[in-house]
Image (cartoon, rainbow, N blue to C red; front, side, top):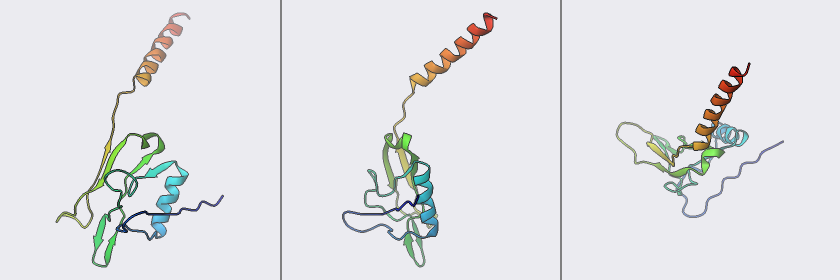
Amino acid sequence: MMTHIILTKIGPIEGDYTVNKLGGEILRLCVGNKLRKLNGRVTGDLDSKLTSYQYNGGSTVDYGIVSEDLQNTVLGFQVQALTPYSDHCPITLKLAASRNRDIINNNASKKSSKKGSASSK
């Protein structure tokens, strides 16, 4: 099965829209493993900022990637300003965190059922 990846953008063009071989591999990895690239798609980076600045130009080589399961917990992704310490911009990812009581309760009930089955032998 052939997968076609089409990158589209609405609004001012500021980001990197050329996909080289390694970029294509990252996109295929995401598609094949149900991962989602956040750059240019979520609050904080809707304009898809460049993440790397070299002598011959800028590009996006640093990515925020999450699983489909975490996609709805993303509160924001941001490419920070370039610093004097690197030719790559720092990136930040904010996720909503919650304690999943169902998992905790499920683990507790498994432990208690193991104890009950051990004592009935």
